[in-house]
Amino acid sequence: MTDRDFSSFVRDVRKRAHVATRELSDSAGVSNPYLQGERGVRRPSGAVLRQLALALRMTTPIMYLRANLAPDNGSATPLAIATDRELTSKQKQTLAEMYEAFVDENERTSSK
Image (tube, rainbow, N blue to C red; front, side):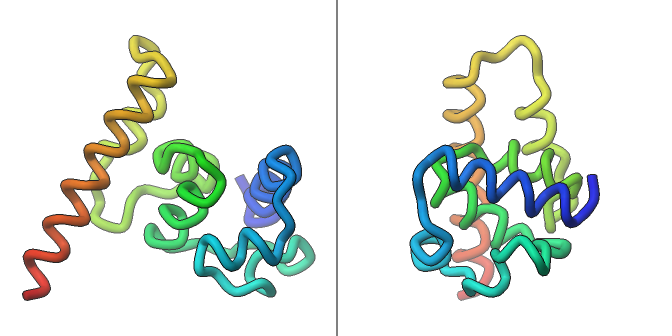
């Protein structure tokens, strides 16, 4: 997937959710110009993917999958969750949220 494809994906999800670019920018904590489709969202970091997923009410693994990126920490867990055919959407969401909570907790603990 190219940068423009990912940018188009974010724009499409944003429009389906009836969320203005400025509103998404504010809720995700990402600059408005960064989100504008003409520039494309270029190689978003894991933090930006998590923020966009939260603001768009999506699972982080789906954002990683659509961005064609492995997580910053090198873990394949989010992608494995997103692509597991045995899990329901709700189960994927729950697992992704638990995983993100553990990662966030570990980051907070290690930064002390």
